[in-house]
Image 1 (cartoon, rainbow, N blue to C red):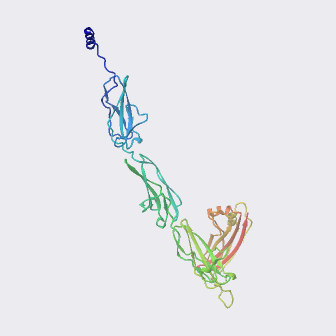
Image 2: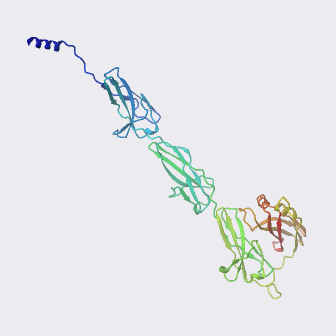
Length: 440
């Protein structure tokens, strides 16, 4: 028994010691070389030390919240270097070093970087404006596009001068749409967008709209001249108008059995002259309508005196000027393929024979089936001539290019020719009307 105990003691004291098998242990954690990174920077990890010099070491980059309480691995970011991307804005970065040997693995984390700042916003395409630039219409802002870290975009409508400069913010106008009003007339409109985030802010504005036309308004109403005697002409002025020119002027002659509330239109009477008819019976007035791109407005003349029949004992038509003019019109031939405008220019003649100085003006009132944007009936001034002394003069109509194009598309046209002559003092010396119907 004593010999067995001795052998055991000999084995315990003399057998070589065997080290326990353990995974690597970290001596020094990894370090990130830039602790205040920005988007686009490249970071490097290193400096970590392990007690097993032959252990395999890999790095995993991690994205953490602002206080570092929650972190998540960044997909495919497993090297010793990492380039900061826009998705990192607002987060802290960390790298985890993992060492592995035959007995296992262990990890060690670096300190956190500072939060990655937002990428400042930059404009890629400016905002734009759609809609009709007229008072009473609504404009709509189409958003621009921005780069940067989730910028917050605000909007402000601007009222600018006619060339798009000297802009001022329109109070309270920050929505997607803007309803134009009187204050916007004669101005242009822009929309300004401002994008901002933690990295800063930037602004971009749209191109200006066309100037907002001032709506037409009446300053003085039209005035009738002449006597309301059956067979005599009444002549209408257009009154005076304010707003952005040009104006389109049209007229409507009306019969009024009583006061202004009883007036009704006289069909087809749209010229600046009206020959009083037996059917008129009471009073006459003219309604002038002026329109421009900003809208339209109408104004009526005062009522004429009561209409009377021409008789020896009653009021007579206004006597002509001493420089009387004999007016005659002729239309020679049939319209051909050149169109109705060319036919009128080439074949219609108005001849005036004056006994003294005179001026002759010719107007055409046309109606028919024409282009939709060209309203009819329409009265067009087509020619004028003057004589310094007694003699004969011929007036041929001439049309503006746009009018000629509209008439060229027309296959049938009703035309009322009105020729007016005035003496050297401006007094009415003659007035004639003819009616034509042209087809091709």
